Amino acid sequence: MEIDFNKNNDGLVPAIIQDAATKNVLMLGYMNEEAFAKTQETKRVTFFSRTKKRLWTKGEESGNFLNLVAIKNDCDNDSLLIMVNPVGPTCHKGTGTCWGEDNKQTYGFFSTLEDVIAERIANKDTQKSYVASLFAKGINKVAQKVGEEAVETVIEAMDDNDELFLYESADLLFHYLMLLQAKGFTLKDIEAELKGRQK
Image 1: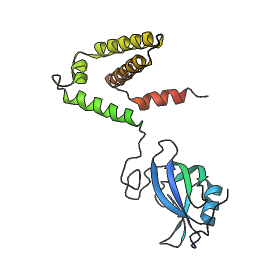
Image 2: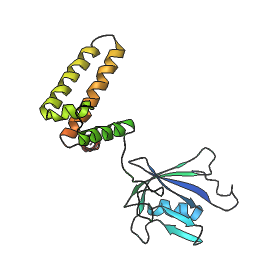
Image 3: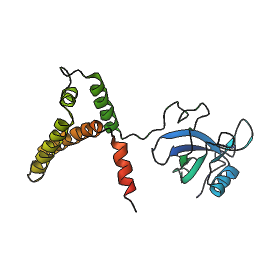
Image 4: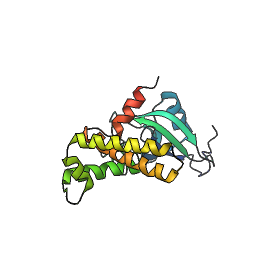
């Protein structure tokens, strides 16, 4: 890997730290050649501290190390993307990222949808919320609705109308997310189950 440590005339390149599992950006640090070499050797991310003027391994005092997974160089060879498995919170203020956010797994819009479902279940306004009204009927009704949507999705899969197939697929997924929550689970639990099957 060719890295241009001299481009900024200070011998340093920015190192963007990303959680290998959640894909969240955790922090930004700087590396010189020695820090880069030590990171590769120890498999723990080491920076050059611009304030302390020395090498600094993240976690050397707190124990919250950044265990190296992979390093990528950008197209200009002057910045690094470093994928890690973090041990504990990354920020010295105790948050998961240095932007004050939790470093939790998200699934884009599906996580937003899970949050909306949870909020409507908690609100229990059955007059205004389809989700709340279905949950009020009990888990058997939620499960039955998933079955109905699954059958409709299969029927549309065997037809030539892609628009209807996608419509029914969306209904199926939506109601499945409701069923997961009715059973006390989320997509994260499904991900863990599927990962556990890999051999």
